[in-house]
Structure formats: C-alpha cells, structure tokens
Length: 478
Ligand code: BGP
Image: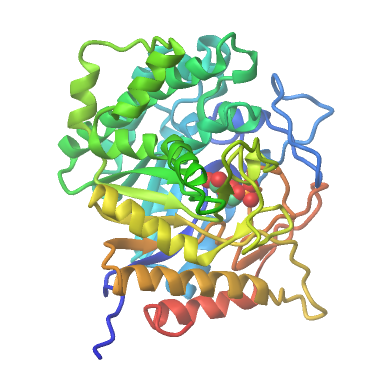
C-alpha cells in the first residue's frame, strides 16, 4: 500500500509570544503592557492582576527570557534544529506605547524588522500573531479595554501599520491568540489578558464578554480585509484554543450536553471562519435577554473578513457530564469538565490525549473546509539538568511523538489540510497561566528561575536533537 507523507513544504517550527520571551519591557520606547502588570506565581498560588507596577511584587514578564537582546543567538539555535517557520507575536505596546497614538514608535518597528530579517536570513518564515494576550495598559486604564469600541479602531490602526511595514517580510498572520479563552471570563487572568476587562467586576459579566468579543470579531475581520488589500498573498488566520469536550458516557443527555458545551468553543471559529453569528448564539442571547450593541456595517465587515485558515493550540481534552457542575479547573480546560478515566493528566491537571488532536483536526476541517495550522502543542514540565547540565526530557519527546503520530494520521489518512506544526515554547519562557519559569516547554533550556535568579544562558535539551531529526525527515523519523 502506498505510504502517504506530509507535504514537502510543511511548516515545522516553534511558537512563543512576545511578552513571554522578550523582556526589555521598558526598552526601545516600549509602553507598559497588560502582561507587565501581572505578578509571577508560585506553584499552586495564582498569579495576580495588579493595578500597575509595584516595588514589592515580582513581574516575570519584565525580563522574561531576554529574547529582546538574545534573539540572534536563539534564532541560530532554531535554524540548527531546521525550523522552517517561527511563530511569535508583536507587542502592541512596542509599536504604540500607549495604544491611542497616531504615530508609531520607530524603535519598536525597527526591532521587529531586525528580528524578521534575522529569521529570513536562515529561510525561516515568520508567523505573526497581532494580539497574544496583551495590549497597552493605557488602553485598559483610560478606555476600559475592549469594552470600548474606540479600542477596535486603535487595533485596526495598529494592525494596518505593522502589516504595511512588514508586507514583504511576513506572509502568515493571526489576529487574536486563543480568543475563545475569553469564555473563561470568570477567571480574571484569562478575561483580563484577552480583553483588558476584569469581568467578575462587571454588573453583567457574560453579556459584557459577548460585547467585548463582538468588537474583537469586527476588528479581526477588518484586519483580514485590510491585510488582503496590503498584500493579496497574505494568509491571515484566526486562532483558537482547541480543547475537545467529550461526552462522559453514551447517555444521550451527556452527548447533547457535550454538543452544547462545544458551542462555546465553536462560536469563535464559526464567526471567524464563516463571517456571521450562528443561530444557536442568537437564540441564547434572546433567552438571556442580552443586548449586544452592533453598528449597521458590522455584519458586512464580518462577512468580508473571513479568516484564511484556522490556527489552533492543542494541549488536552476534557469530558463533560449532564447535570454535573464539574470539578475541573478552568485553567486546565473547560469550567464544567469532569476527569476522564481513560487518559492521564500532567502535574497541572492537563489531560494528555494525543488521539484528541486527530479528533479535533477532523472535526474542525469537516466543519470549515479551510486549512488548519497547529500553532501550539507541548508538554509543560519541571526540567532538571543532569550532572553534565543536559535536560534528559524523554517525557517531552514521548508527548510530542504521540501527538505528531496522530497529526500525521489526520493528514495522511483523514485528508486534513494542515499547514504546519509549531510546538509551544520552543525555547523556555514564562508560563502564561502560572507566571512561572519552572513550567517549561522548550527544546532549549534557559537558566532562569522562579525567584528571578539565573544567568539566562541557553543550552540544548535532549529533545533538541530529537526534534531536529523529526524535521530533517519531514516527520518520518519520530
Ligand atoms: C496557551 C497560550 C500560551 C502558553 C500556553 C501554555 O494558552 O497561548 O501563551 O503559555 O498556553 O500555557 P502555560 O504557559 O500556562 O503552561
């Protein structure tokens, strides 16, 4: 039987986000970002959203892993692994320090010019997220974040400026990272980073969340539309956190409950990929008496700004049971989830399920019939260098191998159109949910620790050479 392969131009690479790697939070004219006012977290103790930068708190994103000053060294290591692409985000507050200016900050623009040039020097395609869990903090304080429609115009101006500037350097874009995590609006960290709004403080948090979303959907569609005018070759995607919710049993009530629960995730893809609100959400708003304010032109903007592809992160699956409130933690997936007895979980409660990746790719491709791009997948763990200073991260290799096997099956057996695969945190960085350095994902170890100590020295983990061979063989050798 003929053995089908991954496409020759498959985009193997790695992914990070500006605020989790760059550091240099007050350099090159950068303004304060929402990520700069989040404290670090100890294991089991949540990171905190503060009302500014205080002397008595530790803010890990201020230094992160100093990619701002080490990017040349890091990109050389990515090139050594054979990366064909590299996903990062632009820190909005480097380009517009306050967010509401007309004129961009030239030093910020120059930084990304240099960064993209360095990638292209090695033949590495930049894949750029416009908004990855951060925005200028000034927009939060002065305007109330994405609740305010004015922020939509500021974002469109920002995206216009960067898309024009990098029109010949960047082909692959994404608008909002894991926009559906806003659904976890009861957890301040997610809602706040997705939108600058502390939802639990709002009189009607759920309605407010949909209003915020509407502004982001319209902003995303406008960015897509303008991007295509700037360069018709641009591929502009949306990006969703993909956590499939399985019915806990074949009890029809569980099956229907899972279907309803999945809508909370599909909604985001449906609007981005199809360009209109699906019937189920309009009915839900009606039932709940929500009034989402829309401008007359919005429906057309949404229709004209459908995403070209769907970027997705995949770490875990969850299960849901009708009538059960669920014991699952929102940070580890769906708020109402129950533990799945068929899969194991990581130390952070993230349920490890490689088959769930193939399942998700099939469901999404069948639903949208547009290319998919796995832009995050990975295993967060506490890594300990051995006596020679090397991290023997066989557990990470095992996780990635199992997921790549399922990914290959989705492409070669199921016929899913998949653009590429960029494991999360290809170099160690600040963990988003915990604010720790010690929850690591990288192929490259960074000597930096939760108490802020460390030399920032980089070293190759065992997984570094393993992933190099995976890329070299286009996924044949795992
Ligand atoms: C996703 C985010 C990333 C990243 C990743 C891992 O939700 O897009 O920013 O951090 O999850 O999560 P964590 O760092 O909390 O382990």
